[in-house]
Image 1 (cartoon, helix red, strand yellow):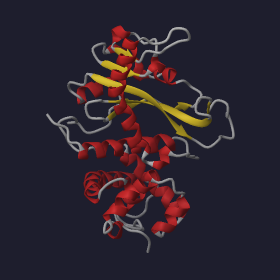
Image 2 (image 1 turned 90 degrees about the horizontal axis):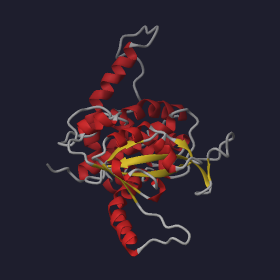
Image 3 (image 1 turned 45 degrees about the vertical axis):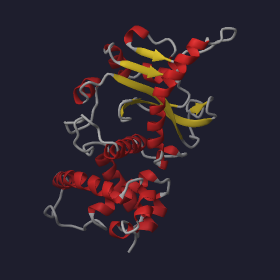
Image 4 (image 1 turned 120 degrees about the vertical axis):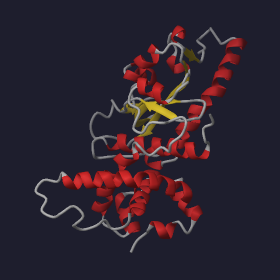
Length: 309
C-alpha cells in the first residue's frame, strides 16, 4: 500500500508543499472534476472496440478518484520521475504514465469555479470568446517566458536561446491586470525565436489588433507596435540617445502595472514540471502539462482572491 489521499490530508502542511493547494482547495477541485471524470470514463469504455464485458466490469483503478487526482497534481507540481512516483504510490511505472495521460486533459478545462467573471463552462479558444466570457475586459499584459528543456538530439541550434544560454521552448502569456488571471497564451515555439515574433505570428496578435480600445501593455521587446491600436510599450534607449527623465518616469509607471504578469508567470512556474529543466518524449505532453499548470494557477487565484462585482 502506497501513498493515498486520506493519509496525506492528515498533514496539511506537507499536503500543501506537495500540491501547492490546501486540503480545502483540493476538495473543491476534486468535487468539480469528479462528475466529468465519470462521464469521460463511461464514454471511453463504451467506445472501446471489441469490448466483451459490460461497462463497470473489469479491473478497477488502484485507488479512488481523489488519489488519482493527487497523483496527477503531484506529477505537475514536482519534477519527480515516473519511477519515483510509482514507488511513492505503490504502483508500477506504466500505471503512472497511463493515469497522467488520462487525467491531464481533465485538468485543462471545465474546472474553474463559477464566478461573476466566468459564467460559461469550457475553454476559451478565441479572442471573441474571451471578450464574451470577460465582460468589460479592457486591458491585457503580454510577456514571454522560457521553459527550459534538455538538449535535444536534433535541431539543437533551432531550440537554443542565445540570450538565456540554454535550450528552451517559449510562449507568450496574456494576463488580466485586474485579477492576475492568465487569459491566453501563444503556441510553444523554439527558444531561438524572439518573443515579439512569437506573438506576431500567432493568431492572438491579429485578434488583439482588432480591438483598438483594449490596452496592451508590454516591455521594450515589442518596440514598434502601433500605439493607435492600443499598444503601450516601454521606451528603449539607444546608443547616443539615452532615455529622458520623462521617458524613464513613464517606464517606471508601466513597469509597476506590468509586474502582475511576472507574478502570474511565477504562479505557473511554481509547478516544477514547467519551472525546471524538463523533458517529454510524447508529442504534445509539454502543451498538456503547461495548460494544466496555467489552469491550476488560475484556480488558486480565483479561490484565494475572489473577484468582486
